[in-house]
Length: 129
Figure 1 (cartoon, one colour):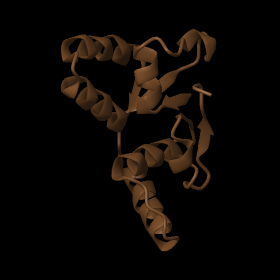
Figure 2 (spheres, rainbow, N blue to C red):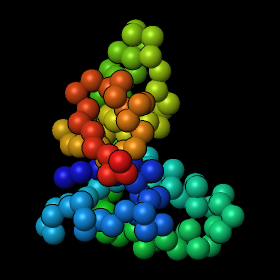
Figure 3 (tube, rainbow, N blue to C red):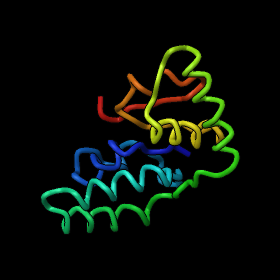
Figure 4 (cartoon, helix red, strand yellow):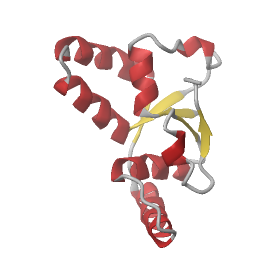
């Protein structure tokens, strides 16, 4: 299972990425509940909000939504402390996304490599390169 970051979801909704070109037919593709909040927020504040909300409503049913649960919360707490001790910061939403992915030992598909590379043991892919 691969987990799409918000940037890849937006690219999918705008047709910049074709999902079938990147995944096997039976492969499960997921999104975190945190990223759902990010893309819904973006859709509502956008100029074409009705159109973008409709796109979100079409995308979400084909994805598995991963919650921020207790296991992810423990990863989040450890990860935030680890990065702070190293003098590195990552925004809270990105930390939560990374924690969810790490807690399940999955792959995060993101174009935001610069930020997420700070996270130890986080497996990354980028379909927008």
